[in-house]
Amino acid sequence: MKIQLPKKYSQNDPSWKNKTQGTKGTIGAYGCLITDVSMMLCLYGHDETPATLNDKLKSNGGYANGNLFVWGAINNMYKDVAYGGQVQTFDPLTKSQMDFIKGKIDKGYPVILQIDTIPSTSQLDEHWILAIDYEGDDFMVQDPWDGATKRITSWGVKPQDLIYAYAYYTGKPISISKPTMTIEADLYEKLVNGATVRKEVAEYLNIVNPDQASRDQLVNVIGGIKSEATTLRNQIGILNGDLANKAEQVNRLKDQLLNSESLRTSLSKELNDTISKITSITKVYENQVSVLNGKLEEMGKSHTSTISKLETLKTEYQTLKKQSIEGLTAGQVFQLWLQKIFT
Image: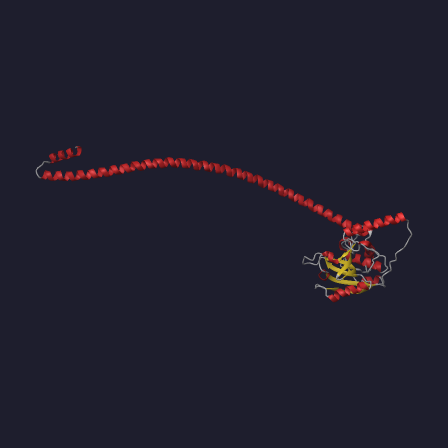
């Protein structure tokens, strides 16, 4: 690691996360930037925490509009620390800008990066992290949210697109000496085993540089995982409640469907019975109509026969009438006609 930070802080440390930042909000909610600055100040020989720095900023004009960090206030508070300036851009970082950040890290100056933690949304979800090393274009950063060292690419976006601003302070980094001591073999073995287990846990948790993972890092990362697990359990509980409600709705709809099916079956049976009755009645009516048609046909034939006879009688009557003219009396004509009718 190019820059070894003597102190690594989380803004959500219980010691200060609920303290008011400036005059509004809390360090836990808004203190990512002052947590970065406090870690940087420790590197430059000033033993600060987010809480102590917050108090000093309050007393030295370090906040504007309640809790907005005033960059120049650090110059007034620490004469050996100088503000190097800030670059803001909504365009992807150029190669020269990336090289500029790397150059400051090479000189031992941590670079404070502003990133968008939810790149998929149109608004800037602002978060400030501290860059302390790099591999190619991938920066190693100290994340003040959980106090963990991680790769900037862990946010799933190229650094050039993720970074919206960067700033730095110059100072004289302190040298971090590594004390030596003589220990017994048994204790040494325990320490080695403990370090091995800690490294394996750090690797499992995807902590950058697991060999250097501290207990606080592990606790913070595990705490974050526990917090996420609690959130997931709560979400699962909500989902289970929703599923129970959905299941109740499905059962209610199932009952309604069964009732509807029963009613449909009943109505279908009644309809079939009615159709059967209508079919039976229709057959009776058809038989009656057929009989009536037969009678009508017979009556038609009888009517035709009667008409024919009447025509014949009419003709014969006319003949007899002519005969009456030839000498027969009307009574004689009538008698002859009756004889024809009944013979």
